[in-house]
Amino acid sequence: MEDMRYLTFALGKGRLAKKTLELFEQIGITCEEMKDKDTRKLIFVNEELKLRFFLAKGPDVPTYVEYGAADIGIVGKDTILEEGRNIYEVLDLGLGQLALVHHFRKKHQTVEIIKLNGSIELAPIVGLSEVICDIVETGSTLRENGLTVLEEVCPLSARMVVNQVSMKMENERITKLISDLKNVINTERNAVQ
Image (cartoon, rainbow, N blue to C red; front, side, top):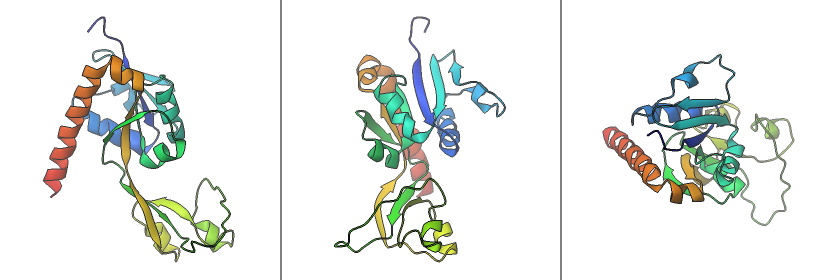
């Protein structure tokens, strides 16, 4: 492994990174230094497996992957759709399964899109909008605020994306990683059913 190059992972910050690392641990990939909540480090390394990890904001993950700063990224399907980057989407990890829902059905009505960065449910309550488009996990915040789902746009979950050049150059390692993760995911799905 001495001559092997590092595979670099860009992980979406927050719960997604935590869940991803838990999944990786099931296939023998660990990174102990990432567990230190007080660390100020930006790059985390597993020297033995020649792996590097860094945390990024979700919308930045596809950019890091497309431009080769990361070989592999873990990011939500919604972000992949929004960013439209030139990357391979290779695996649905089944983590953070969400549903993108929105509240406008009037197909023939002109709408104005207003981008908000949090507490989207507040917009119709305070009169900023009549309807919203939001990503929800359970829908409890919507219900608690008197809002209802009118339409589901598409199912969303965390996906593994790969840089196109990395997929060619590190095909064996990346393909094995994908295969190992598929086995764990399928085992978990079968155990639930």
